[in-house]
Length: 315
Image (cartoon, rainbow, N blue to C red; front, side):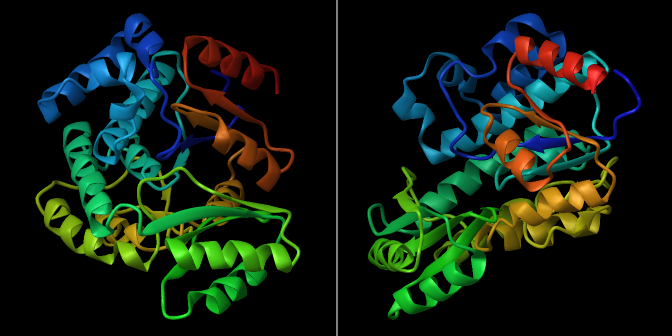
């Protein structure tokens, strides 16, 4: 791997899962296989089988999705390391922040998969199914969306959940309030807004009970200083010490993911290439829009790793 690049790894969140993810790395990389085996042992369930074979409905359950995406991402990072590609910095989108912390050496894989399985259960249980919703609002800026949320609330919750790019902002809250906000955004110049196929309204005030329950789980685990800086979702600050890890992971549950600011922070810290590690390519596309001119590639399978290594060597 050429040393000319200061690589930032980007780790995807929930929604990037797909049946079959990680299987090619499991079959071709000894380091990746160890990650899958360790995750299976830690959870005491056959996570691998659900990831590789489905059915999709089982993989889509939040308590399964979260450890599955984390495992696939950490396994992909292990395969990258085998080939000499290692990050100088990292960030992860929502759940992906846990993947980043594992790869940075802050959390053990076994602790992380157990915690995110519980996190998924707590987030699902925080709001009765059908009463919450999330929607992506496109074509209007953050200030407009904040005002739309304030005007649409009418005593219910509708908050900014993700700032994915200047023109793609996700909102979350009570389903009726989210629907009112979607209608208002259209009236105020929004290009289009789409309700997202999620099982709960993540990263809004309705998730506060999940954060309280997660605190007890995080209190049980050992946290180490990261080997590389990890940019946080909550404030785009740098986590450099163990003391920063748990407080910000707890705040993250009911706070917006400030992804635009995270990518900008990575660039300002000297990242000269972004590598999305794990299932999907959503973060690669966002990085190209947020930090124009910085190469961004995705690694979700061995072929993607070959292409990424070639692209970075040529860049």
